[in-house]
Amino acid sequence: MARSSGSDWTLDNAETLSREHPRSFFIPASERRHALRPDDWVRLVFLVHGGDPDGPSGERMWLTDIRTTGSGGYVGLLTNAPAVIQDLVQGDEVEFGPEHVIAIQDPEAFPDALRAFASRRLIEDDTLVPCYVYHDLSDLERPPRRDGSRASGWSLLVGDETEAELGDPASVLVPSLGWLTERYPGFGELVRSSPGGRRYEWNDERGEYIDLGPYDEADG
Image (tube, rainbow, N blue to C red; front, side, top):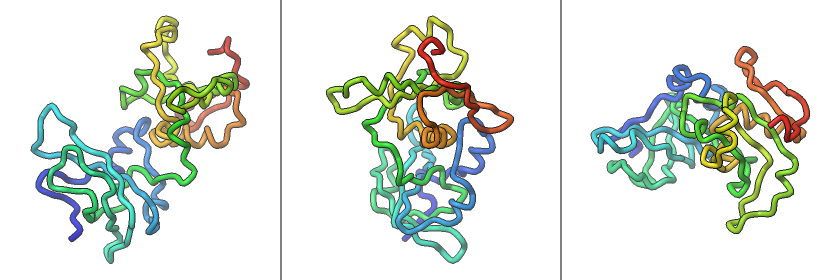
């Protein structure tokens, strides 16, 4: 039997999260969330209740095999095995609405092996967004690492980094490009449309990245 909550979990409202954090919490367009297909993979936030106060407050997990309900909602099968939640197991049916969807898997997603450089502050602070990004074509010439990962050429910065921070290897992380495009949909659109080798700055008023011209290492 499909459930929308359990003894130690409830679903968080993605629309509310997006309104409260418009610069850092992006969700798919309403039209897309209201028109899910059976083979879609959708991600929801499962809030944890009554657990370890020092543990995670929620788990982000994927559902598929989506079917509609008569009330305009959906039911899907949980594909993840919860790490903290006890009253839910992989394969359970979960009932949810368009308002709960935080992400829809992109069939054109980038492989995990493709990596980008990103400010550690940016990744560790959910209130920050990449305000300055650039694509360095010379990075594409780097040989793959032993684990098979390779550079995409993209770098994401908060935009207010000091010279000391930029020169400190500990201040940089190398996450998956696909993960970054999911976390920042505006950046994802830019990656897919950019001709490469350029630099961009986020414009709050226009809600998009502005092309600053070709990237040169001296611009870093």
